[in-house]
Each structure stands twice: as C-alpha cells, then as structure tokens.
Length: 347
Image (cartoon, rainbow, N blue to C red):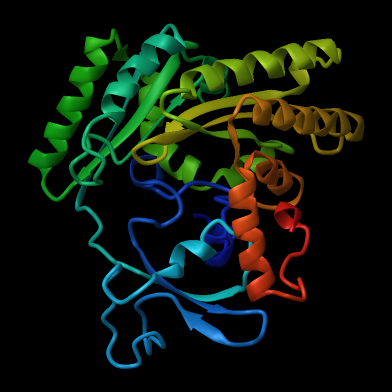
C-alpha cells in the first residue's frame, strides 16, 4: 500500500485506501493470511496483545503463539472494526521471501462477459499465492484502456502477473494463464496495451498517482464471486444513466472501471469518475450520486467498502440484530464512555 495514503492501523481497521497491496487480488486485503497478532491500547489504558510478538503479554514467556491452542484469539475483533475498540499500536506479520522472477501479460476481449469467463476460471484455481497462476490480476474496461494507452484498441483487458522462484515456474504459470484465456476467446492485447503491462502493477499499488488527474470519488463494492459480474454491470449502467439524467457532459469525466478478485471467495468492483476538483458544482453532483449509489447498492445486498463515516452506518444497517447487539455489547464493555470513534456503525 502507498505510504502517503495508508497506515498499517488504518488498513487493518478496514479500509484499503489509496491503492492495493501487490498480491491483494490473490490473497486478499486485510492480512488474514499473514497477520499473527496485534497489540492494542484499550480505552481504559490497558494493553492487550492478541497473539505473537515481542514480549507477548498473553503468555508472558516466550514468543510462541498458536491460534486455537492457547485460548481465545481476539485478533479478529480488531480487524475491520473502524477503530471503535482501541488503538492499534503494533502488528506482527509473518514474513516471506519475495519471488525472484516475475512475468506480466495482457489479454483482451470484445465483451466483459467473455473476459470474466476466463477470469472466473483462473480465480477458481488454488488460492495460495505461489500456486495460483497469477499473483496479481484485474479486468479493466475499454474506456479505461483508452485513458491509460491513448490510441489503443478499446477492449476489455485482463492484466496479470505471475511470480515464482524460478523461470520455469513463472513460465508454467504464464502458460496456464494463456491457455485459460485462449479457451475463452482471449487474444494478445494491442501492442500499446502490451507495452503497458509492466506499469500496471505500480499503478494499482499507488492509485494516489491518479489523483493528479482530478478528484476521484470511489464507487466501490465488495461482492461475492458469484455476484461480481452482475455488480459491475449494474454499477456501470447506474452511473452512466445517472450522469445522463443529471445532464453531465461525459467529456468532463475520465471514468475507470475495474473488476478484481480479492482472495478466494469475493472481489471488488470499482467505477471511478475522475474530474477537475476545481469544478465545485460537478463535485457536488457527483458526491450526491455517490451517496445514492451506496444506498442502492446496499439494498441489492452488496457490501460497502469503507468502515468510516456514512458508509460505516450503511454497513451497520445490513447487520442482523444479533450481530449488531454482539458488537454493541463488545463496545459497551471495552469502551463504556464511548470515546473511541463514536458514531461509527451507529455505535
């Protein structure tokens, strides 16, 4: 994640913000696979260590922590919590060697449905980082490709990157990816797009760089693999129709549409209209549309990305009464004076 946009505590609290981790599309976003424990200052000033780490106060002796072997492991309570239970001051992660070899590619289709059929099959393969054909992958829309590579053929493009510890491993993964893409009618992308493949990884890791192109409200959703194609289609249709109804000149906007996996069972859709942040009237209209979009998306059962402000309260409206009361009980127990981010999730 880009250091100028994210903090470790903020990212763990539930918001990716400003970009994606390099392997987010294959292993997910919030460190579930690699996060070993947290040290959190509770509202009463006491400190809890939820797992392993230097001087773990759970076990007092040593630094060995095995989940489900030493009693309840409350790490998950503080993940995606919007900071309502305490202040995260330390996180312990499992480390691993960076891969020695990488190879990126791009394949294109005339329709989103065709591109997604290939993506879905790749998505269904083994979910672990070094066994999956791709470490990073995403689908970009024709208008996005036109913006990133002017003059290129406007198609739906699947960008991917394979990683491994040998050339043979990477070549095998790339061959596997190519075979799946070809099976579903994918073809080698326009030369200008293919030349861009080495740049797309830094781009998605540091979306803040796109901020130089203007304001960029994020019409983003978290959706199950089963529903993500429908979600992206609905998002694009809703946004394009709403812009037309408001009489907004599309020439004033640069629109990016993205679909990507995020681990094994869910992914993200993102439709981002970028525009001149000095146009205050356009900014007002777009942000009104964003609020309505999130309301409509919530009613369709899609998950809102952010765990802060208005969007956190939309999330809380989706919770069952049992889950809401469970969270409320934890909040009252840990923070009886409601001093930690009051109002998040209506708490």
